[in-house]
Image (cartoon, rainbow, N blue to C red; front, top):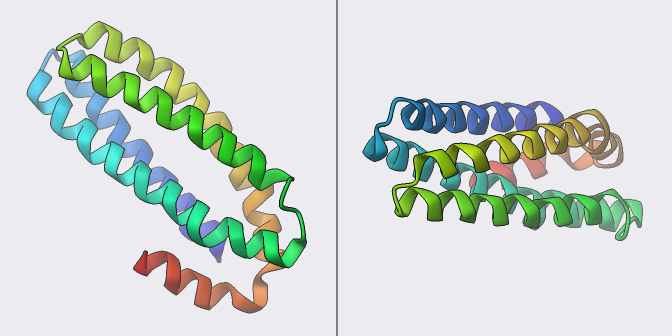
Length: 142
């Protein structure tokens, strides 16, 4: 249940990222900026949902505060740093730099998502099964 919701959110973010990259590839700075702003907002929301709702609940239930969620938080910071570099490249009109950073970010996000979707989210589904509906409501309202 949680896996389905969060995986679907990954796909929304992926689609917005592709939209920004396509606009940059076409040389359309304005469209790239607008699409990237959408992507960045969606990613910020997704990361916040995990860090504010999912991770604390999983850690409290599992007792694993230094385990997989600590690794995911560290990767979230790497993702945020790369997104900031991309934003700066766009603001200065450097589409080639934007696309170069985008290649790195795409690899980072895809590896990160795979770990979450194949390992962490199923662990959360098992550990939080009795609270899944309430957590899903909190995530949707976040």
